[in-house]
Image (cartoon, rainbow, N blue to C red; front, side):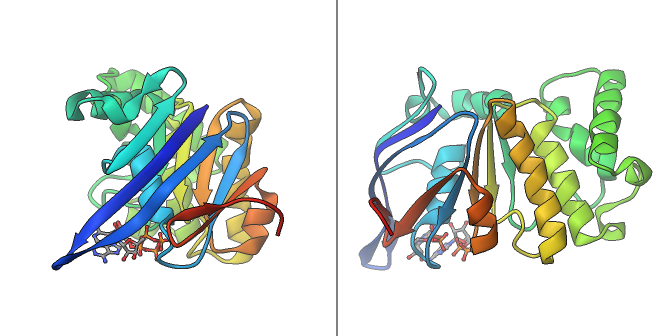
Length: 223
Ligand code: ADP
Ligand code: ADP
């Protein structure tokens, strides 16, 4: 389980400050997909970036199982993220000079996994995601939905216990978006913690839990 306690993030903005998150507490449960929803500028990306350890909270704590990740040093955090977290970026963020298989292998390279095993695992996962015929294609040769599947494969290849996704279906048509969402629902059935940001009510409806954010606050209660 991934827990945030009284999490806040304040950005400097010229001479003043912007409170992007104003003390959010929430449990992201294992085995569930949690959708973070809320208006633009409400703090969704800030929260996801803090969960991923891409950025540091101004105050509050982030706990993953028994580890307080907000207390780790930069080097420890990078190592922890590589071992436990998978991240799916909004605009895929694939490396343009690497083909689909090489993109997926990349986190394994960082983990020091030998080449033969990397290639085998990447191929097996891409085949599972229906991309067996696209292994040596470069990102520019792939459709949006295919690029997103490669990005998801890259997030899943290390078998992380937490998967974080920023608008994973954002730029895709409804049908493609639904097939992408299925790929994120499956890890939850295997006990992983899945957190995604979405603007799409149809996507949020398929999540197990909804976290509503407004003006940097988590809204609770009935709606
Ligand atoms: P959302 O993802 O819900 O659209 P964000 O988390 O991106 O919202 O932003 C929340 C607020 O924090 C907004 O007012 C935004 O302008 C501000 N903000 C986000 N990132 C930064 C940053 N790096 N520097 C300054 N202000 C930021
Ligand atoms: P979205 O509308 O998709 O949520 P965001 O508003 O979160 O997109 O912006 C995307 C990126 O820009 C984030 O990494 C965020 O940190 C950064 N960002 C957002 N607002 C600001 C800002 N006012 N100043 C600097 N960076 C910002």
